[in-house]
Length: 401
Image 1 (cartoon, helix red, strand yellow):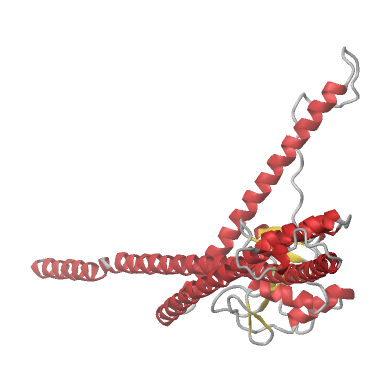
Image 2 (image 1 turned 180 degrees about the horizontal axis):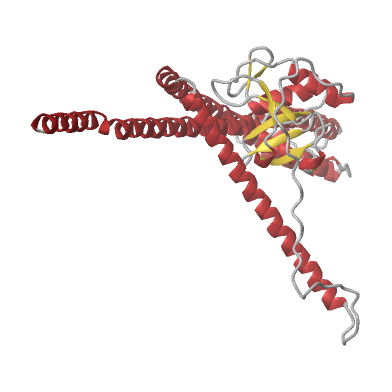
């Protein structure tokens, strides 16, 4: 009996010891997993935030580059105009001087002192007045024309000077944005490498997940705003129809069901299942086919902010603008402007070569290539890739060409 009690006691003590040994393990393990998940999510959020800032800078840089091209074109045009006005001015001044010389040769020196005197007291304005006086006195109409050319020339020279100053300021702005972007890229590269060394691909996968969630939220916000605008337009149309309808009872010809309010149906969104990468571009004709083939030719090229260099590096809008340029179609190197400058089409009507846009405001673009797939240059540290379109995250589609 005593031995049995001792054995029972030993079993209880052993059980307590084993229980004590392992009691904390599940909790510690759970805490460890929870802590690691929290760290991974935090690092991913930081990477996502850096990518968003880089993308924003990239968009601003692209818009500034497009502005620079436009400004240079304006400067060339203004320079040519000023040169033509200077030539016209020289021609008119020569004609008026000839009139003055003829008057002088004829023995009339009235008003010629500012023209032929060596006195330094006469300025250009006084000489111009003398020429004008002579031209008017002889019935010539060149004085008014000269005055008009001078006014136009002054205005165009001032405009050219403003354009040249804007161009210089723009170069300073571009340099500053580039330096800021390179600093962010270096920070992202370092942080991403450290995270990958410690947590493998978990951080990047989480960052990609957060980017997707952000894109989907932006798309929902855009769709909600479009639905609100459509509802307001429908309400305004209904009010106008009611105001125009004849007063009094009777059948208005409008059928209702249970007196309820019928809202506009939400447009259906195509859902594309992920498919394996296609090694060759699908058969697409015309300019869109050329653009699609160009995009396919750059698969695996690294993402490089502010760049559109084939086989070297692209940002997202650089890839799409370069690809369409191969088809002879010029579009801006900036995703927001690519969306606004081309005809927009419903998501359900997307065709190969169309551009698909993400986030609000728009800061990412890819090229739809058919079969629910798109090619894009996603973010720092990634490469030009072929992937399934997440239509829930798309905020718009446009069609170049």
